[in-house]
Image 1 (cartoon, rainbow, N blue to C red):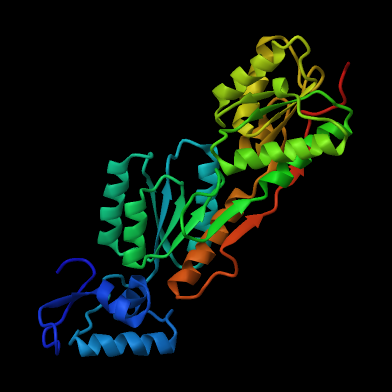
Image 2: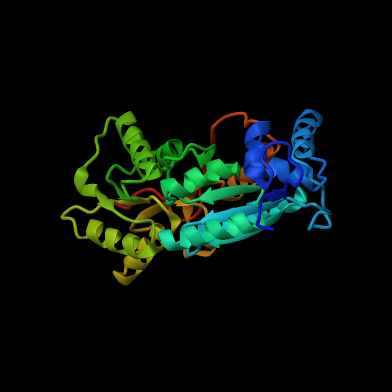
Length: 348
């Protein structure tokens, strides 16, 4: 029998077969909720269970034993790519919370390609996932619509910017993080502060830039466009952006790199020119990835609570799977400046 189909022998009107999707539609619940009722799971409200069981009886469905001996929930965790260190931090948070909730996880990467996304969707249908945590804005509208039709709960974790999807989202306070990084450098006496920004199409990049600008304006300064260079959150762009800033007739005395990976690239650019951090150039990153504590010198950065974002995503998607609504459709977790050895007052 195909996935998500129930035997309707003896159904009073339709005969043949009816999909679990149709049962869910008539009951006004999600497909995973019907699956939980069918499999005898306890995490369904009595009222919802009674409504679903009445429809199952109406269509002559005979319950079969659950294929899972534990009846554990299954969650899909989907990334665009897995080559970013912050992906590991999100996975760590998701796995920790899912384990505590007795849920299993399946991790996938769709690489922004429609073929990979469609293959993932086929696999999702086959394994009857209880929910999806999406860490990418690259999802074709048709696939998002299919998730909606299937009734599979969706939560978006968006460290790279809020996507245009009709789903609860979990992010971080990027504006205040950018402001805190720049205010820290200003407090040390820096006035020419370079910015290696992220991709402008991402909301988080624009928010970090806006925080940088707000901090400068709060001190009576304006943004010098020559001190703002583009980046893409990868080390190579930090290396190139730092070199571009150093080539200016009057280089900055400090740099705010909008990601830790770009900050590490900037450190390498400075090293190759025989410049020291922080004696010749102060540097602040963004993310607080584990490796920056061991960079030379340890990096001052803005901590983005990536693992906590993963944990909250699990709690939210499991709440949706129980047909409960989240407290807010958009949650932003706080960021925190972590001062280490890469910042100091300007030498000149």
